[in-house]
Image (tube, rainbow, N blue to C red; front, side):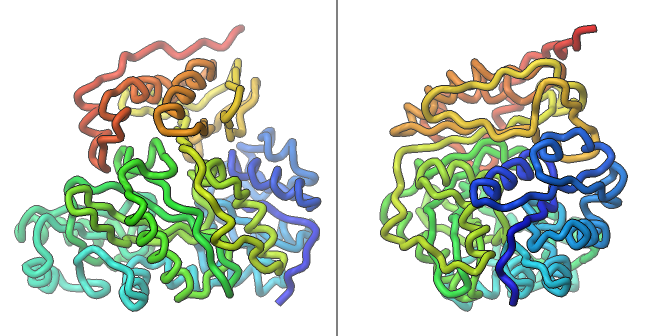
Length: 463
């Protein structure tokens, strides 16, 4: 298979496209950005060596149009395609088409994407590799009567999960058999509509679980881990705030958790960057594998901060056919990093979207502060895509110091012209439970109900 390339097409947009362009340029690669009509003036377009229009604003006719993206790659003379996250990043058919076109797909093999991208198949692979999983069904469940029978052994409350789901979607929780019958029909219909696949499976619902994930890198022959991240602060199963490492995990549990991730990654001969996600039970100290993301994650910067490993550059090196440079003993965990997602949303108004013109931008600086974003003064945040506009990342010697640094950096960060989630993160920084890392995946929604944020008028754009 071809591996050498000197020009990279980034099949994505926004902050991750900017991040990949920067990494590629540091490795001496030429870069090609793709853009929709809504992104013609984006920072990625300005930064890339070349830019190719792939369609109108709606993602289904641009960033999700495989034909258009592949044509942009071949017409531009790119030798490789990096999919980023979201869009086509975990689409095995797209990876196959990239390779069939004689190009390098910067990521795992199509087989690994299919195996680990399907939650039921990933669960089976984990069990075969001896990795603990949440008690649940053995694969997909087709009939509601079968689901009710299985639930008797699994126990309530129980989760009905779309096998092809992702991003917290395609999930329903039932408290008893009657609710399971009702929710099962809804879940299968939703799964079919959202993912084109109505298959679902069952898992026991852990009421106060933490969401912990392990970052791995592999070259198809050898795999290393870059320790864990905690992503328990979520709203509607969408991550809001992430930390590395988890304050809840002991050294012994960390070692066992990371070793289990390596076993599963080796079992599928994993290539590239990937993340194995787990639920962690605070009461028992048990952890359970739930799914794998076969791509770079939004929250990858905090792992980079605590390990010093540039994950995107390592992905590109592996894609070029270089053996994995890192040995496990070379990867050390230093300090604590925290990332908060800055979305164009008004948290005081039920997180209503806030697209519009950015009239002013003040980016924080100083030691241990990083802001990954595609924003600039005069940029118009479009209404067609995910509301993420930036990620504020801080690193310091310990968690308390990192929180202090985050509080200071959030005080400096100003984005005028649109509403953002900056006020939410400032409030969380001052919460006593957050300071103690005393939270779980249901914490934030309860916190929001008890701590309504004051609505503030959107900063007006100067005439």
